[in-house]
Length: 494
Image (cartoon, rainbow, N blue to C red):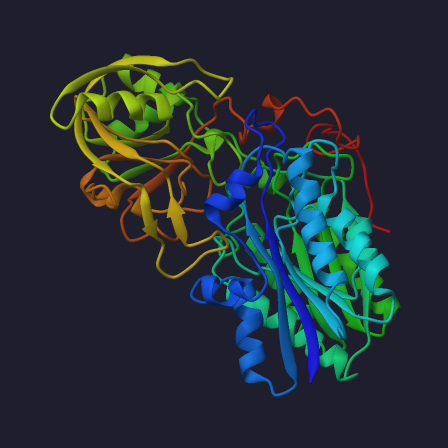
């Protein structure tokens, strides 16, 4: 029986969000240690559940749970939070006797106040503890910012194959099977890593649509070769400002370094040659709202610049202000994070009118909007997203109120919401298919969940912590030259 230490540490950072991520954010969505983990997460369909399924299917694996920590997307982790999580994970592994392997589920785009490459720092610390002879395998979101330090400290890795992410459990299974084969000495993984000096908007990150579909299909074709164990592609989430940044690709072969390097270079070059296809030119808020009003609904307005699934604070008022300015007279659903407004609305009571200075308190790109609205309904903000995702399926938005001002319905919560899922509205009695305009706080994560409902998605060019127009971001730490910030640069894969 092989004893495998398993853990999950998952948070996606926006360096441009003013709200730091603390240990309370991890406690909100899930912070568990030791044997308690199995009972807490058994139905979430995440990578950790994939590890558990693999162990149930095998006769030679014993999983030793160390930590399960999921923090919602947000700003950089406070350094104290990062050091705490790192210490708990590394010390948990160090204090576990007779380990044969370590299997981890990471996001890959987590950053802390003073540590850019958090996953790389953790992996190097684990490697110092376990030495070179115990295999170390990890799974990643394919929006990870892959680094040399991560790759050099792993024996193998795998990553998601779909966006919106629907293969989280399957990715866990693939990672566990890689570990099994390695321990049985059926394979000798060798990895090659290529960093690509480019960053692109997330608008075209759906793997079932061009142009990303073409790049991912090329990798799946390579995986048909028996000597290729895995191909992991990383079109990085664009809202990080860290030193080693950009798209990347990792190829894992069975003891064939030259082949891994050649295939990684080929895929990197293909991505570079396609780079212009990923750029977008979205309408400004005033134009996007007019377009949505004039078309048959439901129309989804993707407020990607305030993406709660990308690290933004969820309280941008730019769209609300413009809708009030245009006197929008169609049924519209929006969300807002504003604990002060929630408190005031609850004090007023259901059926009463309340005047609040709504939003714009954490988002530095807009300002609060003074609004008089009626309190329609309240909830505790707790629900479960059935079917799972790369986020925890147990959601706690905190106390939540439904406000109505004219035909604009505002779901106002104390805490962040999963911007991609219709349950944000349904849990408080709103049905998105009955609206003309539905605002989602994400870029592409909603495309699967809203597919049966919406007629169309309109993406918007507006300021915020997570914009599609990357020229709006004040990158300071990323390596230069970097496309498209340096649009005339030349590059060729090694």
